[in-house]
Image (cartoon, rainbow, N blue to C red; front, side, top):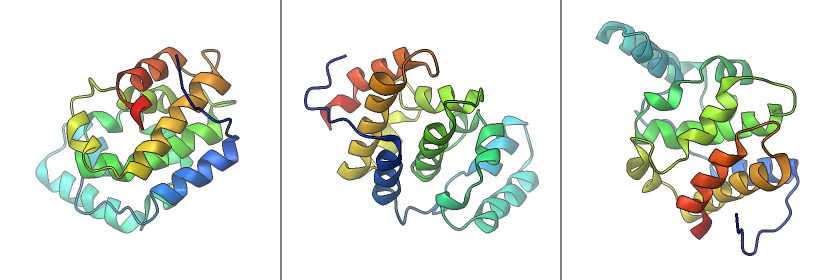
Length: 169
């Protein structure tokens, strides 16, 4: 992977950059983690409505979603829409950075896979992101590739996502 002008970033600085870039992002009627879980479980419309209500009342911002919730819901990105993706990707990236060293959760690699351009919803969520948010994602992938590596995450998938799209930011 050629990162061009990649600068060395420590984990805490990267978390802060993600928090700044996605500050103020709200679910805004999108599919959140609870509703995505209901969809995954083939729930009916009433169950989806209840889950949607839970998503909007359980936490105001993505920063409020507990790591344990993110840890348990590793299939979320298979079921969210573009607004849900924009809302949840910073929470999951922060979860990965906080937990990759000692957590074997499938949510770690599923976050990386969600950033691949062949993700079914890629064009929809990518167009909602600001340049600052795209740069934060780029730096997140660079960090996983250059500083974390394949022993702890799927750095090969991170490299593929980076080289296929995110390198340009």
